[in-house]
Each structure stands twice: as structure tokens, then as C-alpha cells.
Length: 447
Ligand SMILES: [Zn+2]
Image 1 (tube, rainbow, N blue to C red):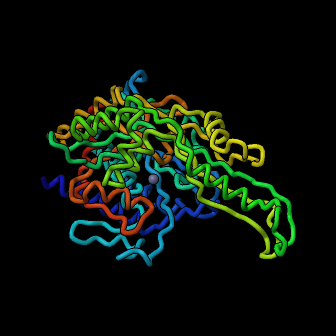
Image 2: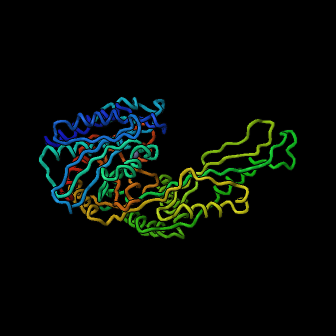
Image 3: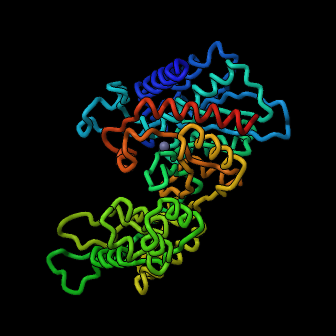
């Protein structure tokens, strides 16, 4: 127990340091400056026998790798990956300083507390503890503190997997996020993220003919065409697809036979989501069974007395893991109908989703270890609607999971609000549990 307390304190203090470092990534190449947290990690690992490598494709956009080399070349390599950057925070919406890392009543407040400095910090603490305990496993453990996750990973995971493949070579990856217990009649269920939807951003350029705003009769106003385009996209509803992962997730939640049957039937899931009182879960149910289209940005016109001849509409499309970018284009064409010929389509991002099987030796090890750390709990697989660095590894066929282990102190339904939201926070027991999880899974899986 005394050892547990030490784990908790160590993880808490490292997390607070990372929050205070405020490696805020606003998408510009010079933001982030993750080197601050890399420096802190190198200080933290000092004296443990671990040696650190640094990778920086741009000044300050540094990632750090340290490893415990395995004894057996045939045994698997496990990569524990945490990002060190965070998204901006507007202090006005917060009840604490977002970068103050205040610790009060066992709760750490700050940007990154759950996305995902909690995991980055606890993985580092577990790695250091394993190293100093003389852990000499069969398999290899690689710890990666990666930069730039919050802006598509260009200077972080994308760079490393493309340009430094040997440094990040692994057979399995664990990263964000999962493991927030959901209460069910038979005990807590721990979501294990095994895949994510594809990011397909499309820019629709609608053309018209300019004219004088004082004589609009029968003009070719691009804004009016664009309004119809937006309406059609909003009304478009691709057919639902129910995959094995969604089925297992819903069944794991033990929602009763009627709702379970409705939510896992492609013909009924939309109606079931529409009539659900729990709007947060309705959105999850819809997003996990449909490719979704959200028109989120529009630019139109140049002056109040000119009939506009050009409108740009940006649509955030998230495709189910098995839907290709070409299929997304076909869906968009179907949505636009006879207006398709009036619209030019550009693709700022066309990434397919990614999916790993939950049934792997690592999945089994996680199940064993969590059953021990949280008696009565069971793991349920799910897909994430947002993108993480895991996709770069899944695309290469490396099974990659989003996981951690949280206490029940902060209810599970509060978590979705905290990602990129206000009052992001984590309880210190969750930090202890996650540290013990990483340590135990390395001992179990890498032996
Ligand atoms: Zn994240």
C-alpha cells in the first residue's frame, strides 16, 4: 500500500509538470514546443539506467523514445505511446487555471489531464519503475512521448512512422484512450478502443454568376445554390452498418434485450437513436453505425451589393473503418443529386479509418491484468469517432489499442465533455491504477 501511494504521488507530480509545460498545439509549425516536456522526461528518467533518443523534424517539435531491450528476438515488441501536446484552452470557461495543474482533494486540474498527459505520464512512471526494478523481459518495451498529435501528427507519429520506422517498430501499440468504467448490472465494463473512423474533409466550391445586388431577379446566386447543397447534405442519411465491434460493445453494456436488439439491427438503429433520451449515447450510437456528414464551415460573397459567384462549404465527414475515401465521394455525389455538376470538390483530408482485432495476445493480457486490478470488471471493444496517432500503426497492420484504467470517481458520462473542453481533470487514483496497469501488462505480456 505504501508503494501504491508512492506510485500515485510520482505519477501525479509528473502529470502536473507536463500540464504546466503547456505544450499548446494550435496547428502552426512553431507551436507545441514539446521539447519542454521531453526535457522534463529526460530529467525524470535520469539515474534509472534508461537512455533517451530525441527526434525533432522541426525546432522544438521533439519526440522522445526510451526502451528496455528484450532478451528474445522472437518475443514481441510493445510500444507505449503518449502525446505530449495539448489543444488550446480558453481560461474564461474554466473554474481553475487551465495550465496551473492545481491539485485539490485528489483531483488534478488542467489542459491535458485526460487528453492525454495522464497516460503519457503514467506510462513513463511504469517504464521507469520497471527499469529500476531490474525488469529484463523476453520482449522489448518501447516508450514514446510523441509530439503533434493534436494537428494530425505531421511532426510526430506521421514523421516517425515514415522517416524513422526502425525507431518505432513494434508488434503492438497502446495509446489513448479507454478504460473509463461504465457501470452495468454484472459489473463495470472497460472500453478498449480497437479502431477509429476515417477523417474525410471535403471542400465544396459552388459557383454562380456575379451581378448587381439591387437586381436579384433570376440571378445565378451561388449562395442560394449553396444553401440547397447544405440542406441536401443535412438530409442525407447513408445506410447504417452494424459491425462485430459495435455488436460486442452494445451487448457488453447490458441495456436489456429490446434496446440491444434495436441498436444492433441496421434497419432499426437510427430510429432507436432518435428516440433515445440520453443524447450523448444517441450520438455515439449514430456515429458508430453511420458515416457522418457535418457541414461546419462556409465562406461566401465579397460585398453586400454584389450577387456572390463563389461559396466554399467545408464538410467534416467521418467514415466507418471499412469505408474507403472513394466510397465517401460516391456518398457525397448521391447526397448532392442533380447539384453535383454545380459543385467542385476538393479533399483536404482523405484518410480511411483503421481497425485492429480485439482478440490478440495483448488483448488477452489486458483482460487478465484489469480483472486483477479492478475485480469484477470486463473489457468491451469499441471504435472511436475521433482520430488518434494509433491509426499510423494500424494502417501498417500493427494491432493498436486505446486504453488506460480509471477509477469511478469521475462518472463516465463526464469524460466526453472534458476532451478539448472546459475543466479537464483527473483523479489521482486513476493515475495510480493506470501506472499499475502499464507495469502489470508489461510483466504479463513481455514476460
Ligand atoms: Zn489525445
